[in-house]
Every structure is written in structure tokens, then in C-alpha cells.
Figure: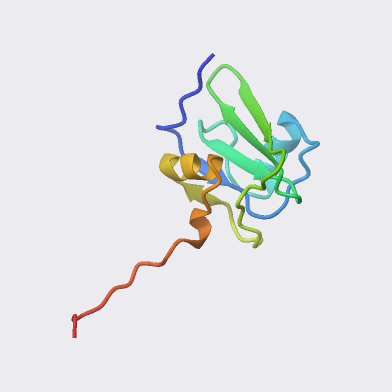
Length: 115
């Protein structure tokens, strides 16, 4: 049993999601609120309001994968603003799953001159 998300597009739904929902409920959110297609082969991540529970749903052409992780002591770094779904890279997913808050990384600075 192996799921490879390195080639998949990965979307995060900002804000809190009621994670009592299963595949059908999360697919409804993906289509109706995120305006994306749950069958497109992308992975979709959701977090609950306490930031202790994370779910990911992924279509692999034969069915849906639904994985869940509950943290016992820490919380997930998670964007709480209610903007559109954000796409993240697989490297950012790795950071997220290890607890690194890349949402608040230093912004790149661009200057015309060094003096």
C-alpha cells in the first residue's frame, strides 16, 4: 500500500473543517467550496479547529484514499484565513507534516540596487 504525492498537485483548505466528514462530505467541500474537481488526481488537505487533526483525500483512478493523523501534544501549523484553496508543493507538505510553519517564512526581498 503506497501513495506517491510527489507528482500530484496538493491543495490546502484554509480555516477549520469539520473532520467528522468522510469521503463524500470532503468531496462536497472540494467541489462546492473550493471549486476544484476531487477526481483530478490532486491531494486535498483539511484541518480541524483545534489544529490537532489533519485529513488528506486523494483519488488514484480506482478509488479514494482517505488518511488521517491526530497529534497528541503539538498542533498543525495551518492558515486560518478563509481565502481560496492554496496549492502547496510536495516539499512544503513534508515540512507541514514535520511541524514546520512555512506559512510564516521570511518573505523574499527584491531590490533594484545594493546601495
